[in-house]
Image (tube, rainbow, N blue to C red):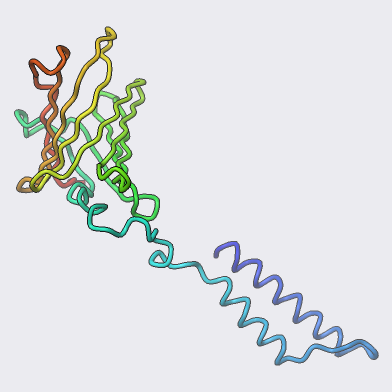
Length: 203
């Protein structure tokens, strides 16, 4: 039972008690049973929870906001070159009335990270912020590319070097493949960072 329903029932009980008391005491204005019933209907209507359909934001209904929906789901994560051993579990969900995609990623070695992804309609790009329980932060932006997503950004290595990052997400048979490469020489050369695949979680 939600809070609003509890309050409504308490008020209804008080109305019934007051109606009974007023009818039993001469000189006091009475409340009819019909009045109490009508008030009860009003209280019950006001106590009904708002449906999800009425709370979805009207600001995030354009097709661009759904471009990353292929990533939604509960996943087991594998290195592409070691497809038999899961290295992480991830859950990708919509939050904030469907405006934001939340990635919750937990690796078997203790790394726990989350990314927040949103389509910035004013700039016409997607933006992602990635943070972890190891103090890491990465800010990316990008766009739909063919049937996947391509993001770029930069961060710093543990030694303080500026590092450029390119990341892609691509739907593949049975899941989603995420690949990232990095450069510490201003984009002259690139080296692999990770190449992983998300497959539907198996309990």
